[in-house]
Length: 377
Image (cartoon, rainbow, N blue to C red; front, side, top):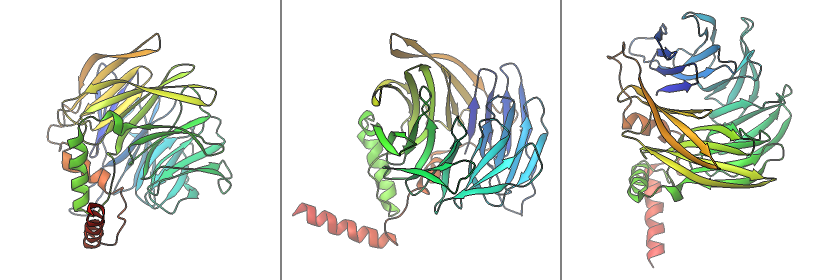
């Protein structure tokens, strides 16, 4: 899978074991050298940019290397071996540490001012999909494949503040609400965005993206594919998600929904504890994006098929948001021999996150047949 971050200073894309760093003038490529067993493929599983925009963290899937780069250089300043494959990395608020959410359910923390190995600070009983530290540094929030969001006190993470429970499928993205960081936003395989008070775990608002996907055939095609694998789903999952604040009481949420070639732009505002949202715009795309990020008023959309990043600008006027095409930047020009991401790759990446409700496909199909026969009577 491809990964990307975008700011006013850099566009950074990563795929396989290559990173393209573009400063809007020149490209700088990092090729990560790893030692793998014969016929063992490796790739970058996530990248993260520090809050001050000066450091880039990269983690690999098979070789399990955690690398920290100064963006002015191409050699890693720090290198760590992580015990298990990771699904997500993030810098802490002060940029002195890295949070690593691994696929066994543990969150480790690495002090990148030292060479010491990471320390486990908390664990789930399921594959972790995202992790973050709140802006006041008091909490670590983590989400998993089992629909759970856990809020842990920091640094004493054995003290659990609360859980945010309500999603019906895996929770693949969590972000603090940009214009009011006492709230948490989350996305899921159930196709919804939820807004929580993460201190008490109370759900305040839900955005159901299924009402904004007008192509019913997309949903049916996905349901049919999942049905063949014995997986029962009801909605298209959210794949990419990114947020930004436009004003003191107004945020923009950008997301993609599986197999829909568009970026959905929502506005979200609140008065006291009452929230309202609106679909502001749909950016129609030629292909389903490999990565998408929102930074301030810029939306970066990476198309790995064509190897370019499309940049759009948000225009905010009188509480209305419009979108303008800004520019198009070519990436990985020196890596024409690398594989491009295809629909099968994208499908497998999301498919593994669903849990089979039955032990085998045959049992699932039999239960489904009985259910349909009962409903037809």
